[in-house]
Image (cartoon, rainbow, N blue to C red; front, side, top):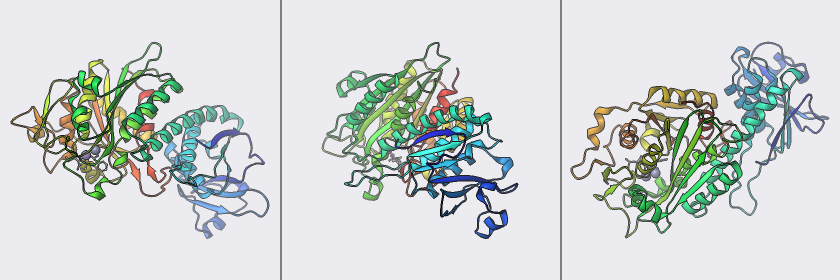
Length: 480
Ligand code: BES
Ligand code: MN
Ligand code: ZN
């Protein structure tokens, strides 16, 4: 991260721009030097996310930042407001604001939300360019009174950690496929583990074969790049529970022999966004004093067509002994997750969550702004929904409709790897559920929100890192 976040009692002289929160009712802060009527005359009513830049001949630029209904302040409002401020002040290096000083949101939560909003909006993928993409922001200063400053400071620490994790997930997914293959992400995982107190084990093709991970090997068959499975473990003293996370790490999804049309392949470097979210989230657990043991599995391989590629009609045998007949090689995510989920439940965790850019069907159903969630345990799904509303990474539950299981029936194997034209989220989830036994399990389908085409609040163009902060929030509040 290029920008830092600091806390001050008053606006520092170094500030180039100063954000001033304004609600839709109540008094307008005197520091703006304008009445509500004057602001309204310039089209600014204080609505959440609105900004009005007020040039100044002498001092710092003032930015009126709308926070909406003063009785409805929330982390979401503050995160969006901070993002709007950073975007409105995008040419400035040092941006100060008293946004985290508003009563109505707990100081810790306010500090976290404002740090996240500001930092996430300042994210740019550097790119592989002679002149890398950059951001002007070097410092975000949160001005907070004596009463709140301690709470704000601790919230900022958390917000900086969660944002750094989201930056990592975004960078991993934005990196072109030739620069981010299965070996590359495994190397990255080793680095992250060393820096953040995780144990890491990397499994190569031979080891995966010895372990019976037929899904991983099958999907990898058409690729000249070898696969990698990475197991990360975070073990606190006296863990309060054990959580397992499994991420789809398809480093590039061409579709295999069921080749995607060219347009459908654009963006498929991001088909490892689930693995990126798991890796990034796990890298922050120690700093955030997570009390549960967490095991993470990154299931990494390309999905490519070639003379050695997986064929339609082939049957794969997964780690748990079940088999699947391949009817579409583009339904590959479930094949690598099948091995990952099988391994994850062998450790006897209290819950398993997988995260994957799994289906176009989920995008059709829910659009690009929210992920689908499906599970075999309602309390677990509800905990994920709670975490999701805290981090503002929206998820919507879809049913695990058992009567659709026959859509996966096969004459030659335990199941087929696709259901049919309808209910793709449900049939893909039913497939995954075959590998978790009785362990409480939930599946996040992040195909839609994995990327955005244009900057939008705290989402910056490109990979979003969706799910990273959600997994952190979920893991750090997890108990058996
Ligand atoms: N990685 C894709 C899903 C995807 C599509 C993610 C677009 C993000 C953006 C997945 O592997 C896939 O190809 N799914 C198929 C499954 C189908 C063949 C049953 C799909 O959704 O079309
Ligand atoms: Mn696919
Ligand atoms: Zn895929």
